[in-house]
Image 1 (cartoon, helix red, strand yellow):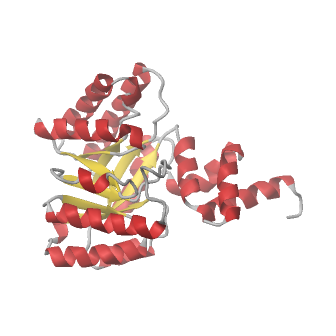
Image 2: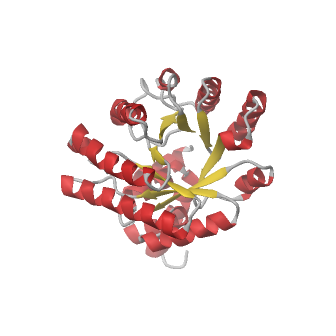
Length: 299
């Protein structure tokens, strides 16, 4: 990232919300469940799977957390009713993790039980490093109780390789959260190496692995690992974000690989949008240029 990119990223929180909304709309299905359903149908028509995420991490009360869990039950109803090729991904802070472990667990168990009755898989997402231990603990407790749930590991965290043993269904991603240097690799090449090492360890351990990246170098190295492991096409998958250029994903689908698209929706889109824009300096530049045109006529 250049010095200009860093400066733009730091100013993003001051950019008018309508500008952020317009530029981040590629990443978000919309604010309503009906918009998410329509997006998933489009994704499915392209021969791709989907995972639906309800945006809502900034909750302050147990009632708000319970409401988000209720919205996920509505999502599960829609997946079953519309016969979508989709599962769900949940963030534990949205279920009240910061309010208390048991608050979060009750909401998560409600959603997992509803999903189990429909045969729908639940992915427990990973957030910043303050949540890692509790996230893995909840995942293990639910797996031990016989629930069909998965979890996420972030390759940029230095601890991640040590978290691999005993995990069964794992999405591997680089990780979007900015952490202290003592906790997180900062060099992009080191993060790529960590990603591949984590994926290889999971494959060796017999886990189902979801390779979540748009990095072509990481995809190529992962394909080599998968071929070496002898995995069938139904024993792993690739995952990508909604709105990212589709050419790489389309190639994977044509080659016979499973590809799942991450489809977020909801009214609480702003914080998610900022993270996506901060992750992608090129789009951040578009934000800056658009804002400049608003204040400097003729540009």
